[in-house]
Length: 579
Image 1 (cartoon, one colour):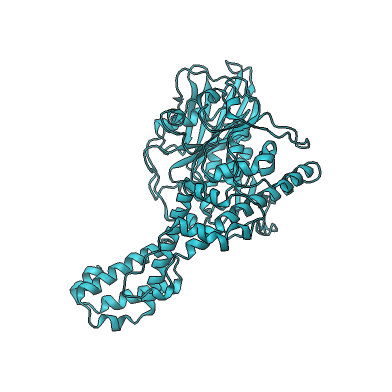
Image 2 (cartoon, rainbow, N blue to C red):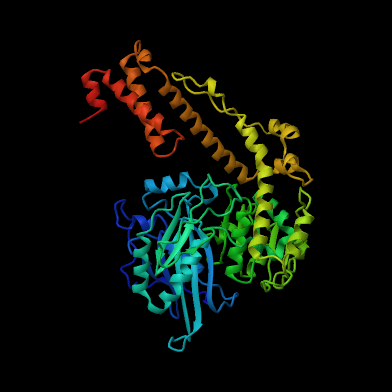
């Protein structure tokens, strides 16, 4: 429905409390709720006010005016979509004003075991939306228009969509009391610890989910589910908390999946123009997920409007287009972003059983401002040859195989392609790690060797992607361009950080395996105190899951600290171990 373009969103007084006004303290009662969600918002469309934030729950959660404005505008389809009935989609906004909720130890623990692509976002919020727009004669304008929005840092789109499917219809009928009860139930859920299968009760239903772990093997399928014997009612099992139906999302672009994979890998700007926020957000999320297990390090907005606070930033012509994947429904963006190198225009989705009509590759010069036909408008030439056998297999299976089987085949292909590309980089990076025998207890550990791009490219002759991938093409050219992308920078920083932590852990192990009493014999008090402080610092880091250290090593480090402090004069012992 048309939302108008006059005044910005307004704050309506909520049923569950006053407007949000301050971050929760670490010991606040909503700690368990906060492990899953930041807050729940209800946005209504008011005839006089436009989009209005009706309530935020818990009511003490702090949102800036800019965040409230973004949530309001992004919680409804724009007037070009014409979405009546119930619709689900998602958006992603930049957090304004720095971190406000205390970062709990449990959050760090959950992130440390999660795949890098599924760790919680430190600087962005995800919004998962369930909007109802239906005719209602009791409302002055003749339409009931309201959205229920779950705001979270977790990219668990499948889980939160399932949760909204249960909660939103009930809420639209019963309003505030229902929502308060649901939030209290979520506040009883166990933390989303990676590797665990959890039962999450809500509104008389139990959702059973597996939280992905970095230790999970790719493409091994969902882990074995827990026994249902003692659970009444029997749980609703979600096969994934985050994976979309990739085949359904990519149906119109199957012929160009590899081209799109390359664009994503290289961090190229891409505008996705879709007929609705649901199609837009699913396509953008599918595109950003096709690099897994590589983390998507560029910005992306599953649904974006002209009212967004970053609109000017993304549409400026004074500099090169930013590395962002932008999902929109307003054709106005075609005119505004004509200077962008890649535009994907998607038509209305076809019925599941129909043979999907593939969008055609078209030159950017053929973009028309008002009447742009579906197509992938780009002058980009792929570095790798297309896998024609994959396309034939997928198209032939449209009417023969279930969508989940098609999705599994497509996901496996993209995973193997990404792994073939990343494996040589991982192999070369591992060679930069100092040898374990060079790490001695009482010397500063050696440095990680620098990454030299020319050395890496020379190494491809004997350990390149051709060993695991049948696709021919200009792999060297693809790597050279990848080196300039945000994904190389993000991957390198993450791996270097992990290697530095491993080096620090090995050094701590070397200290704990050495004879500390012999070392102390000729050392001054200053040197001994310095060792205590350094050991304590590493112990704190290791206990905070920032160092990969065995429990036995931690115990020995604590014992060493006690031994060393016990050898010092009483006055120093009091300073280092105050009562």
